[in-house]
Length: 114
Length: 114
Image 1: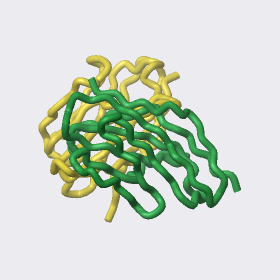
Image 2: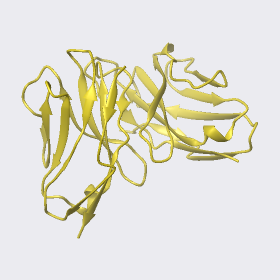
Image 3: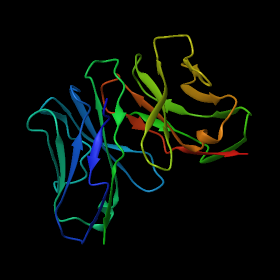
């Protein structure tokens, strides 16, 4: 079946612009995770959802970052007033939702802020 | 706080040879999960192998196996009969359960020499 998909794959924004990054999880997956991966680094947790409930947003770096999953399926990560330090790859992962589950990752969105 | 350390930024191996990637972690949990993910240049993160801490037997997946030393908090990955397609970034990751945010190391870049 289809894996996790993300769009756009690449996004270039001017500093100060707002951006929205989309994640389509594997159909039926209850849990959805967002990670930020800076160049040459490992991914770092941003936030995660179980269905439509945002269970943890402790990794969001500032109040300019906002994530939602209103119907418990597709999720959007929004970054307001982008800054150069926001440049990174944003990864989305989903899992079935059980304790023993594996997270399956999408291809990521590479955001470049000029 | 949980931390994951990968002390080898880069490794290389001859095709058909064996290579071991190191990972250490710190956690106060007694039950947890450990993972090795592979990230090729295409950027899609792929699960290589997982280990539940309560299992004493080391996990294996075809050419991939782990050496899990719980007391030492060590979790190394052994790749046997290395292939050109094994070239990628390898990330070690930890989570209290399979369905909670992952904490990643900084990764090891593996090159395979023909």
